[in-house]
Amino acid sequence: MDKKRVLIIDDDPRNIFALKATLQAKSFYCIACSSAPEALELLQTDEVIDAILIDMMMPDMDGYEAIPRIKKLNNRASTPIFAVTAQAMLGDREKCLRAGATDYIAKPIDVDRLVLLLSNS
Image (cartoon, rainbow, N blue to C red; front, side):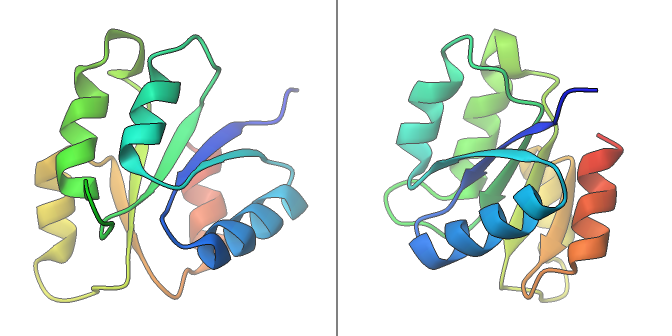
C-alpha cells in the first residue's frame, strides 16, 4: 500500500517541521507550503495529494479564505481538508466546517486523533 500524501499548509516553519516529523514517523508522506497562495499554485498541478492540513491563521490568506478556493479546484473538490488552529474556542469548529473543512483539529495536536482522521480520509 502506498503512503498517503499529506499537504501541510502553515506559515510557521516550526509547525511544519513538527507535523512532518510526526506524520513521517507514522508512515505518511508529507509536502509543505508556507502560504496559502503557494499551496493553491501547487494544488493546480497533478501532484498527488490525499489530504490537506491547513493552519487557519496565516498572513496574506488565511484558511477561511483558502479552503473555499481549494474546494473550487476541479481536481481537489473531494480532497479532505483538515483545519488546524490554536484558537480552540467555542464555535471555531463550526466556523471551520462552514468554510468547507472536512474536520477540525486544535493545537496542541492530539497525534492519535490526527492519524485517525488522516487514515480514514
